[in-house]
Amino acid sequence: MRHTVSMFVVLSLIWLLNSGFFTGLHLSLGLLSVVLVVWVAYRMDVVDHESAPVHLTLRLPSYYAWLMKELVLSNIDVTKRIWLGKKSISPSMAVLPLSQRTDMGRVIYANSITLTPGTVAIDLNSDTVVVHSLTAGGIEDLRSGEMDRRVSRLEKQK
Amino acid sequence: MDTVVNIVSGACLLLGSFLIFSGGLGLLRFPDFYTRMHAAGITETLATGLILLGLMLLAGWGIVLAKLMMILLFILITSPTASHALAKSAQHGKLAPQLAEPEDQRSR
Image (cartoon, rainbow over the protein chains, first blue to last red):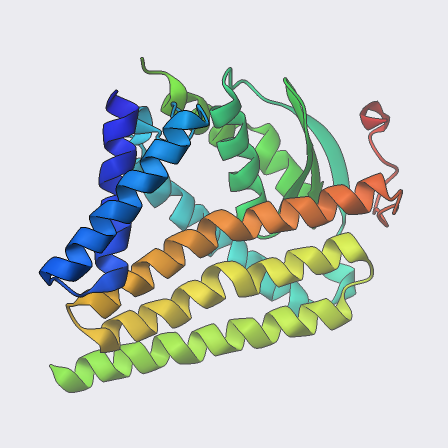
């Protein structure tokens, strides 16, 4: 139930922000589309903790803040290496362990790896992730496990 | 106040453009598919982020700001998904990356 409500609220917000018209006709058409989408999603049985991750709402902002910091740092690093040229990079590939127990956690971790320039998650399994990195240092940073720990902390909540 | 916002916004746009240019340069300079993908990663994260931030500063409080924020959020979610799909299909197509050291063999 709480997933359905959350999906309804999120969809309504997206509709309102994209529409910008607050007249009776527009609002009722919007309500109609939102209700239709929620009903179809409900019929398809996809309204769950994955399509409406209510449990993440409170923890996500602080993780995003940390991720943004990492994003800026790794962007500067990769930009530097682009201008320094081919000699400054040392492409590496490695299989790294991951400690998340839910699919959601694994996907957040793999997506975070890919989002930070310089590292890309190539393959994702239940307890490992294959990573290609622009530098050997990128692999070492991931191996130290700070991102892994932070994502695991995200999912630890019932 | 207006001039300050304009200058900061201009700086963001300029820096974003520089990063996009760098991304393109990296695309040409780097040796193989996987490393080129890292260069493209710059254009889709900080570069787009800065350009959108520059536009947000100009937009002021309103619906346009909200839309720009939504664009940023969606880019941050979809672009790694696309990168991952590219990398994965490259690997499935048996495209071997050029590595500095011999690969960690546990993956195969």
